[in-house]
Amino acid sequence: MLALSRKKSEAIIINNNIEITILEIKGDQVKIGISAPKEVPVYRKEVYAQIQESNKAAVDLEGLDALKNLLG
Image (cartoon, rainbow, N blue to C red):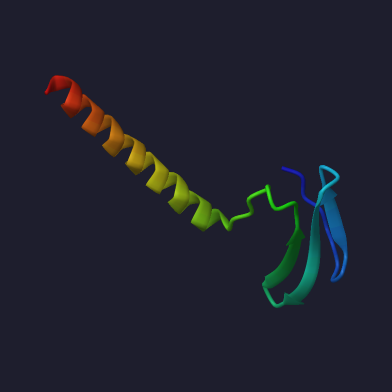
């Protein structure tokens, strides 16, 4: 993991097309802004984990249904 120090209004660039800017710092919270192309999905980690779990559950159910149909 790369750790960088930034101050308010400073930014980092990722892959020439994603910019992350520090918007505000209050106590132990940091507000960031992310500029990325529309085709690049950006999620909070906990939301991403929920999406992955939902996708896994859907695949598991589809696989079970396919197996039931195969066995008749």
